[in-house]
Length: 307
Length: 294
Image (spheres, rainbow over the protein chains, first blue to last red):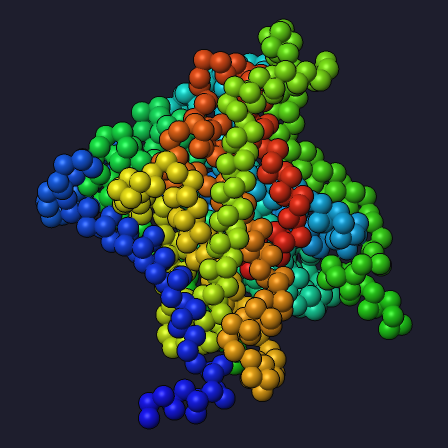
């Protein structure tokens, strides 16, 4: 009796039963991401050196973090890094995309625009640690930057850029602007292709300067992409690790310490796995909140585009 | 009257290919400014390349800013042999290629179930995959390290391959399932009439049609895995098992790393990425936009 059922459904066999295809992905996901993440959260409530049995201490790690100068230094540095990884690349990317789209492409041809776009994007395909080594080589005391300053008579400014507490983070910020700018540029260039050119044309017929029509007409049209870029680069800022590892290891002092590197130190150098897990959990919580905002805005937009 | 207006409009919108606007002095000025900026973007690479091919004596005598007197490849050769760079290249290639292929298959299966199958709860599953995609590595690193030791996968490339197959496929699932959601229903209906089963539908119909998206994802998965740092640094401790970025990074500051050797090491780290960039350029441009969730 039961065996006849599949036959009656045979005509609809493509309508349901797709769960099987999701199983490998779902199982691997739970094993490699969800379970380890839950363990990290669990470990954040314990005192654990990674060897002996973890001891439950409730919220002590989080309470300690609030009084930990290094914890605050790492997140403060992260906020400063946002200037170099979110704010400046977004503004520069917007200006460059506008220039390439409105001036270079129409007047010199698409090849030139593509060349510039690819060129500015190039650092983005590098491992950030390798980019860090390239910059570390230039910024070292006897490196190219100081040599250049001496040749142009600014030798008095020359110093150990990464070793000086006053310039260590600034140097890394400079490098990150260079590293990041290609990402917003490419997104915005594509967004401009989607934007409606007739509005900007109407504005210029009404006497608006190219600059005015770009700021007041074009930029509001690509607001969704600006939102995406700001959110994605914010998340990327929270994950900064490789360049700190190769350039400064968080120093001098805590001048360039970032949460990710602080977690690494706690896990693998200080054997404070419980405390490291608490910081990792805080990082993850911030990113999940940002991701949730992103997804809800994104899905609302998808709906509004459908109707 | 009408034709020139259209030409102007097309040109102004940046969409024209043949017709261009006449150029003013200011346009050339802007182009020159952009070229200078592009030169500044390339300058770090140029400085590294110029110094990687100098002799240590030449560097000591003239400093980092002069052009090299000749092509001296011994520095690069020395670094190459010292760290057994061939092995690093093989390690990185094996890991990245395995991850790119496996994560593509996994994303395709997930995307097939969610995009074509439209199983119940697809939207929530997608949210789940997206958040997993954005989760910081630090949030899963220690348990993975601990489990890997427990199951004897610590310090093996297999551990890195498994982990990144899953991490990269989070993005792939998002990409492929949203592409397959737009899959033409007529083709599915035709497949149904022909009595196709699901596996046939996937292999003979869905895969060929969605090949462009799959290749975009393949390129990204490969490059992202090549560039990964945090987890490979933790998982791969033996020099013989390390990837290119890890091996070069952990060697910085060693005694034999004089300035020209360090420049050589940086150049060797940069070179493969420039090659991938040229190889995958078309896919990358398409994918950065689709992939703006990463």
